[in-house]
Image (cartoon, rainbow, N blue to C red; front, side, top):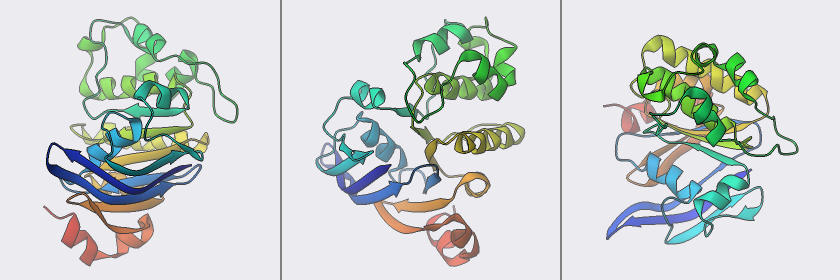
Length: 233
């Protein structure tokens, strides 16, 4: 569903992503693991078009998207949940959801506020609450729900567990598995290996903008040497 090859991205003269390649197949959860500053968020922003690639190809469902603006990429069915959440703090939960609304798509789940409140019961109990009066975990749920209102085929989650209490992290993991069960493809970036082990089918490890490892999550869980080399603090 998503294919990246030979991706090179710069910030000024700084070479951030170097010949990066990865793919996400339909209906699977893929995690991009790495330490702070490894290039995870830049990869996500490159896919959604917020950071321009200097070279390489990014394809979504067989269509080149690396030259498209972000709004066109979103219209194709690719959703993005940024690390910073970026909800509209002065707007209510319902108003935030309405902003993300797109038309239904074929071969993908159609999300409505009622369905999202089943997925996120906490949001259903605060429909009229302004986003600025919500906890960090509730804001993260709202950001994901708003993205789902666009009825994406693939969703990018940038550091979804960062800064959340352990009980909320567990809820987030269950949510991602529910999205997979609905047929969505999920690409997430993470530093939290435990969280990744709960949800991911396959893993890539990025270090200094280069992919250093790829394999199943089960294989990575058994490879202590790789985890120590690339993921230990």
